Amino acid sequence: MRALIIAAGEGRRLASLTKDKPKGLVELLGLSLLERVILTAKQAGICEFLVVTGYLKNKIKRELGDGSKYGVKVSYIENTEWRRGNGVSVLKAEESLKEDFILLMSDHIFDDRILRKLASSELRSSVILAVDRREPMPGDTVVLERKGKIVEIGKDIERSNCVD
Image 1 (cartoon, rainbow, N blue to C red):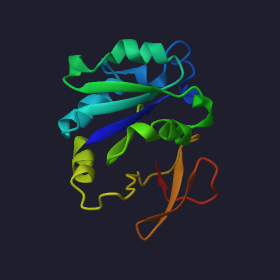
Image 2 (image 1 turned 180 degrees about the vertical axis):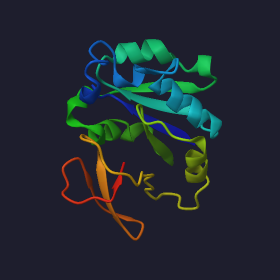
Image 3 (image 1 turned 30 degrees about the vertical axis):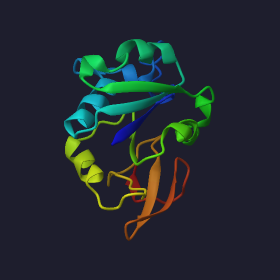
């Protein structure tokens, strides 16, 4: 299984850290957020990544290269319309993704057990969203979920009960 990593955005909420680098390259305990995403996914058995870049794209390409230093394969798609949001980034990758894939964000930290569970799911060809059941912070993408189904998702919805 492949993973699509959205790494195109500027990261305005992290403005003091992202003036000269994409948010995926912000470091946490000695590794960039993007490296953490790739290495965690690798622990779950995912070894092929398609990274959508936009803001300061060349810095991401220089950092990750072809993925060989992590023991994985990394390729890239450029989203020149990165200011339009994550949905546009996913659409830019549409032609390159003809099989099931897992969508990851360059700045989300997660446990590899979550990916193992998603990858082994019998719900192939379905959309599965892993959410946090916590209070949202300003700028979070929030979700209204009922009986396991997404009713509404966005940054500006009025009611929500979990966070993407």
